[in-house]
Amino acid sequence: MLNQPDLNTLSKNDQINHFLLIRRFDLRTTRSGSDFLSTELGDKTASLNANVWEGFTEVAARGKVGDVVKVAGTIEEYQGSLQIRVSSIRLAKSSDEVSSKDFLPQSKRNLKEMKDEFNKRINNNSNKYLNTLLTQIFNSERLELFCTAPAGKSWHHAYIHGLIEHTLEIIKICELMCEFHQELNKDLLIAGAMLHDIGKLGIPHDLLNKPAPLTEEETQHMQRHAEVGYKICLPLKKVLGPALDVIRHHHEKLDGSGYPDGLRGDKITTEARIMAVTDMFDALISDRPYREGLTKEQVIDILRQEVRDGKLDRDVVEHLVEIVT
Ligand SMILES: [Fe+2]
Ligand SMILES: [Fe+2]
Image 1 (cartoon, helix red, strand yellow):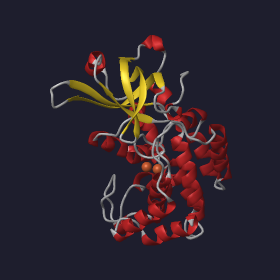
Image 2 (image 1 turned 180 degrees about the vertical axis):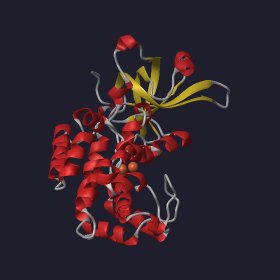
Image 3 (image 1 turned 120 degrees about the horizontal axis):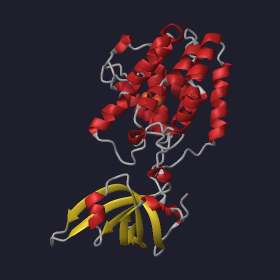
Image 4 (image 1 turned 60 degrees about the vertical axis):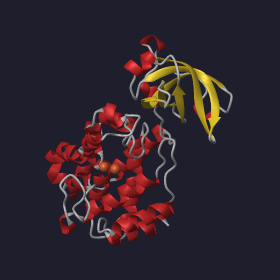
């Protein structure tokens, strides 16, 4: 356990002697030819720029984004923002007993409360087959994994427990969506909501937990969660029916620009369209580490623009607007 003041409680001229996570890392050269290390260092609560002018040979040679460093220095202000003036920096050693996990933010919601709510949702399902199936899928071991996973680092709900929090929000909205779509099987839509991101459990934790923006290749890997989730649930096709489409196609767009299959228009089921809109709404409105989520009005503007661009279903977006306003 880290025993050090949170970065967001520090002010100008405070001294630090902290373990921090490297969030950005560039070796640069000034016009006069001196090398320096330009970094962004952070903990669970904040992230600050730090330029290191000397004593960085070890970190420059062996350090990388996601490593923990021990830093001594002073908090100073530069152009209106706080930054760290580093006097010494070294990579953390195993004897320091710190790991990058100590630096991941956590969901603000209580985990036990979220777990109870999730289990209650499973039990509320009136389809007994589905109920048993969901209980088996979310057995205690998998539920544990599901509860600790972030919904996706650098995406949305990018913190520990983010996936379960995101899923609970999606379930709530989908339940209300059913009022507008009496033709849909509510139990199956809710099952689809519960399972839509289950493929993220198949994404390596290093990638889900990566404390820095994803590369193009990593983004593609992350996008595979829709297919991975589909493959996990495919043997249950008979019971899951349209919920299986939701898992595979919740990132498809009406103009064919989505993934994984680039489906267009009518090829995308109503259930998958609902999930696409709901998922995007929740992703945009949620806070990310060190950046607040967008306002409801901003998110609605973006969703309506997606409708005008031919990507999202107009009716579903307007139903969502009715639900959330
Ligand atoms: Fe997803
Ligand atoms: Fe999602």
